[in-house]
Length: 94
Image (tube, rainbow, N blue to C red; front, side, top):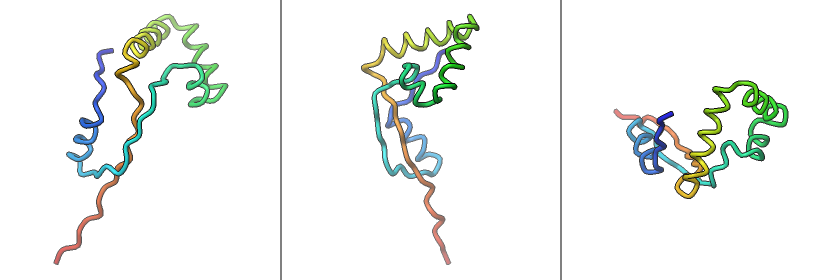
């Protein structure tokens, strides 16, 4: 995977270019692929299903472990970002 995450400024610019107005930006530590977060996001059974798939499917396991290593290596530079934006109401003219 050769994805490059966007900065908050890049996300905000992209949203503005598509006509949206950013209302709020919130950040949190990156917790993706951490067991506690997995259970929180997917529920116990979903997290167990994910773990089973990672254990049973070698290619998936390799991808997930590579992503986790990357997240851990760059954890000081990565964050979870939530951006709330809205589309402005069309102005009434005439």
